[in-house]
Image (cartoon, rainbow, N blue to C red):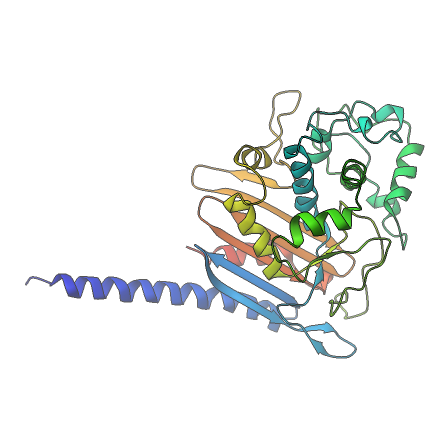
Length: 345
């Protein structure tokens, strides 16, 4: 018996519909399961091939007042700020205002002598050897970039020879924030507003720095017991940004379509740094990198106080997972991400 081409087309379209419906349902079910089990309070955006699979907000922005979250609620995104800092540095490079292999001390004359040969590239790739302040100073409320710089000036040497090792350093990205201000003549807040947030219409994204701008309708941070554990420091570069899943997706699209940075720098951003022993790290300019035959994954997570965040991007297969939560201790970051990834084609 011969089957008509029309029936074949109808069958194919119906099968495709069922596949997409199942994928959508499964991804949302994963989010619902974590929420119902008390492990997630926040917002999620999942996309595949430019189609939105999940776009949801579950829980409260303020547990005391029972104010519900919306997809427009700004969350503190912690280290998801680092890709923005790296992008700002790239924009300055594209304008001929700096080179990635310039010594940072060329612009930041306050750097201690032991760090005078650290390059901008070293800072971007966490290979500088600059000590990470977080374990020592992050509990200090109102901590500012200058406080971290002063702490670095009190250290006696680098942790290791620059370029020889990957060691995550929030301090390095604070130095990049100070460098952005020095080179541009504008605050980190203003430079990102004018060159990233406003052009991309990221209307619910804002830097929170020592000027303490009002972040309207923001989510407050809580711990697993729903006790207040809100963001309380004022550093920028390593963190300091509030945003939404929708706005972060706008940033994702701009990086993919080349509207922010040029093709050469797009390639460079996602290339792992080659260490002095010729081994590759797994970090480029502001992104962790997992490169294989079938996938090119660039990602970052963030976490501080009651906030956790995920920004996961499959560049080869056009998939994005963005997650923001304000009940940090309750949220198993890796388990959630792995479960959602399994639902994608």
